[in-house]
Length: 266
Image 1: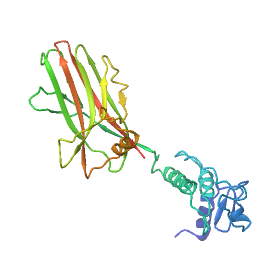
Image 2: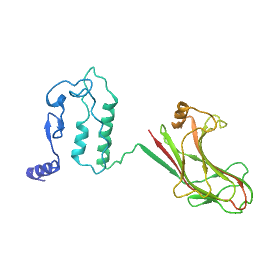
Image 3: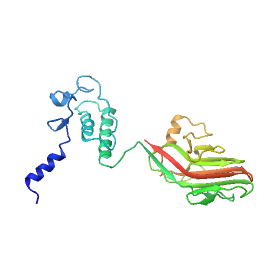
Image 4: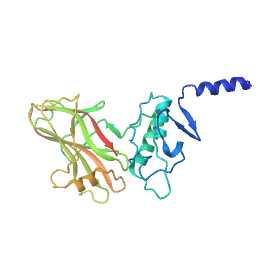
């Protein structure tokens, strides 16, 4: 059993890096004025004596010190009965939680998530199919000599996420065109399959950098409000598909698709 002295020393060491002072149960950074805490005064609908909400601190890095976390926690306003809870209250709490998660090694927490897929394209109808390789698909010169190659695959996107863009790591050469799309298909009616994103892959596009496209619902004339509705992933009502259409190919046509990324956020 460790002695009382060794336990006390361990606890003291754990808090030796903390700076500032304790008032009540709230840790306050030196020089950070909190009139509502230190003087016992009542907060105004804003904050302190300025009438303005506190500035929202940005999330700290995963290597932030304990004092950085204390600053963010101390920046969370104290709620008072009858006062309106504004966005500043919520955002300051969120930033503090993100900082704690990052500090504990659970992050870094980001406002974006990237879903990456290797293309595994199924053929559409009786059209020729893409040649499957390890982790990518391609069309080599003169195979087949002419016509179109269409393929599709399902994408698994997180429920409720907001689609920000799609990035496709692809290239083509020679004759023809390569268009890749993100589609949303209604579960109960597969004829309702609008294009969310459509990207034309340019000749000799840099497959290492990728070509990206935003949600525009091309060909529908959808306005900003409608586009925002389409951005939100709804797996209860819809499936999400990726398609690749290599058209008007000749013996000189080559193409390759290496990866598909869908970037989602809040």
